[in-house]
Amino acid sequence: MDTRRIFSPATVANVSCGFDAIAFALEALGDEMTFRKNESGEVRITRIEGAELPLEVDKNAAGVVAQRMLTAANASFGVDIEIQKKYKPGSGLGSSAASSAGAAFAVNQMLGEPYEPTQLVKFSMLGEEAACGSQIADNVAGAIFGGFVLVRSYHPLELVSIPTPSELFAVVVHPQIEVKTEDARRVLPKQIPVKHAVAQWANVGGLISGLYSGDYDLIGRSLVDVVAEPFRKEFIPHFDLVKEQAIASGALGAGISGSGPSIFALVKGRSQAEKVAKAMEAVYLENPVDHKIYISKIANRGVRII
Ligand code: HSE
Image: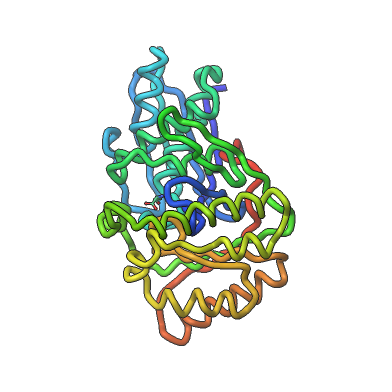
């Protein structure tokens, strides 16, 4: 088969306490991409819908990943790539990661699946570097593996899938402004006080324990971020109010999705998630901010053929 059409999920990275180390994939949102083998031996981005992104292969996250994989495998064919973006880049929902992971998955299939998922994440990290200047693993790991993923180590890369309690839902509000990941990383302190580090790793332990045991309240209490959120929330209109309203209306907890500006909340049960979504959205209706809102299950799988 010379064509692959795939869905690559949007992802929520950091999950408050796990900066650069935890992410989960969304079931209800992601990009669609089509890959076709070509005889030219080259990677070509033939079409991008839904966003203004570079068509030059070496500047496009999917292009960079596909090129590196074909070169590494000494492939005799090239690939044409079509990308349908379903949400804007600079959203904090792993837009470049969805493209990178989608390319890694599809090209691996075309090569006869020589690479393991962790190797696909490594290739995808090259796409992240092209898009935002850093080889960050969290979003791409979420997109490749699905569910919750922990980046236990970067060198060597070690990824751990974490179970998702069955009634866990995510609500995501995406104010329609762009925050570049580079900018959101630049405002972070180079060093943090030990007491903040203690709070952060204790919450990571709490979150992982809560996910394993299905202790929803523990999950909620662990969604605390003293490392990035205090510095990044300034980029996000009415962040404190949206978060407050999410929790007041029954969310387990809420925080910045990845590097923002999207705000996520975790909620137990769909009907509660609908209430939380209404309360979060009300803030942007009362203080007009153009936005999109999503209610989603946590995806139990990553990139997939459609
Ligand atoms: N963990 C990364 C960050 C995700 O927060 O900068 C980038 O979307």
